[in-house]
Image (cartoon, rainbow, N blue to C red; front, side, top):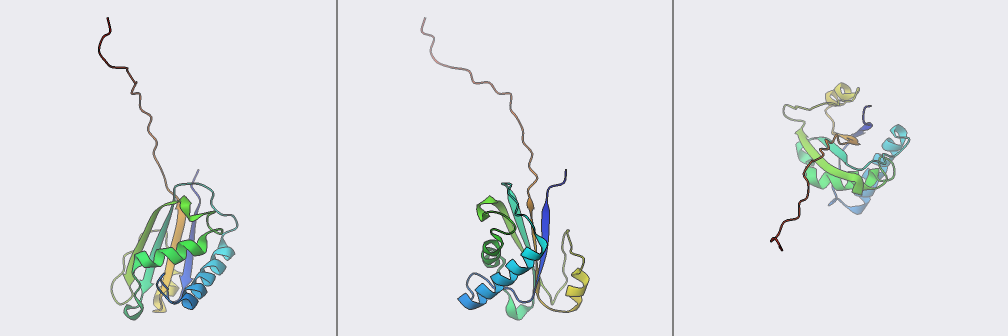
Length: 147
């Protein structure tokens, strides 16, 4: 069974946690609006990841780590119940003025977005694949022989 995964495209300029309260609030409202159109049920599993691919113009660059907080907060209650479920957060910055390498998933409208020479963010949220190993180690009581 494939783990659920959501991929969202947020067109336009991105705003960090350090942006003005008004700009940040508008940006988060746009993220929530887009997420609500594509996500019907929040993920309830633990061990979620969020990956942000940020395609910026040099004059509007935001540090990737500063971009994660407003996005994580905006998706709370829509993509997942609480951001405490996220155990892996990554932000990748891609300068629109240079070559770009991106790993899947790539949304269907990626070519259109890229050709418009505008800024946008791709957010991917999913369940981390985990391997669980059981050990056959037995506990043995050690100590001085009392006899």
